[in-house]
Image 1 (cartoon, rainbow, N blue to C red):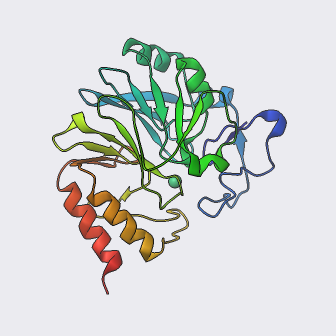
Image 2: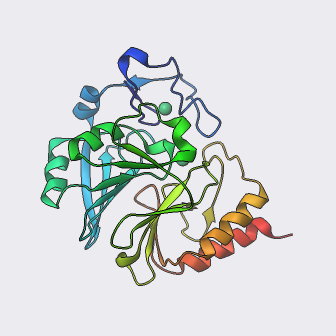
Length: 260
Ligand SMILES: [Zn+2]
Ligand SMILES: [Zn+2]
C-alpha cells in the first residue's frame, strides 16, 4: 500500500491505519482523511519522466505529479552512479535508462520524506541505500540493502560525499558533488528550501506546517554550510535549481533569521 500524500510504501499485511510518516508533526493527514493507492493504480495514471540537467546529471519525476511532487537526481560518475532520493514508482523504461548509463552503485537519502519504495530500487539495482542513523526510527521497511551511516560525512567515490546537516530532520543530509560545477553542487532534498523567487532559502523543522527551528539550530546550520564549498544548488522539486550567487543568497537568508 502506498500513502497518497507522501508516497511511502507499507507492506499490505502490516499497514497502519494512518501513514506514520504523515501522522507526525512535520507532515499532515489531509483534511479529507488518509488515502492509499497501490502500484497498479499508480502505473495506470502516472509515468516517470527523465530530464537531463547537465552532462552528468538527470532528474526523475512522476507526471502528473504524485505525493509531494518530489524528484530524484541521478548523478553519473566514473566510478559508479548515485541516485539521490527516490520517487515512489519504478518502471521498465526507467530501469532500462539507468542500466544504459551503467546502473547504480548507491542510493542515498536526504531524509525520511522520500524513502517511498527504496527497497524496490535497491533490489532492482543491487546496490546499498545510505541513510543517516539519526533517521533510522523512520524507516518503515528495513530491507537488506539499507546501510546506516554515522558521523558528519560519508565519502563515496570521485569526491562525492553525503553530509549531515540536520535541522528539518535529525538526520537531514545533502549530497556534495564536486565535479558538476566549479565550486561543487549540493543536492539538498528539503534540508534547505529555495523559495519560488530564488532569492531566499528557508530552513525549517516543517515546511508544510510552518514550524520553525530554534535560532541555535539556524546558527549551527549557517556555520556548517560555511565550511562547505558550493556554487550550485538542487532542491527537492524541479523548480529548485540555482547556479548563481547561491552561497551569498544562503548566507543572507540565514542572517535574516538571526537579525536582532
Ligand atoms: Zn504518508
Ligand atoms: Zn521533508
